[in-house]
Image 1 (cartoon, rainbow, N blue to C red):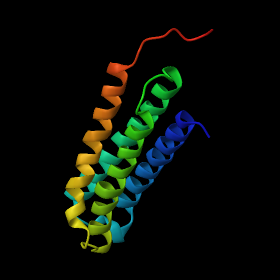
Image 2 (cartoon, rainbow, N blue to C red):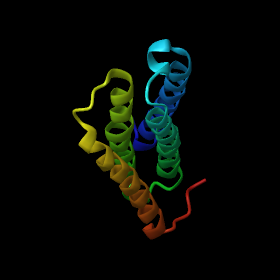
Image 3 (cartoon, helix red, strand yellow):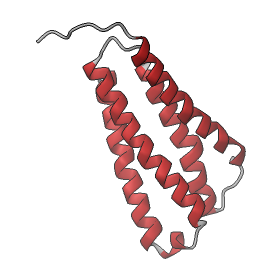
Length: 130
């Protein structure tokens, strides 16, 4: 599968997952009593970066000469794992052993967006064949 398709699929999957987790957090009694602020933050970042993955996939398709798009997507996925999944696990299951990785997840988000921006900004503009 191409980089652009992979990123769009990952983005779409994570978007659907974030919506499903939002519904569970709102309606499942086990999860409703969890730390509302932590879960809300994780869900917001999860949804936002699902769209970021889709955007990176579109960039890879529209401007194939842009370098680093796969890395940008990889950093966004890493951010979802280290930040969002970690906050979900802490709020819903009381798993707190990996708390120190949450800031690294936020850093991965920042790096992902930075790599995407730098790749687009420094790419050589070429016209696409019709």
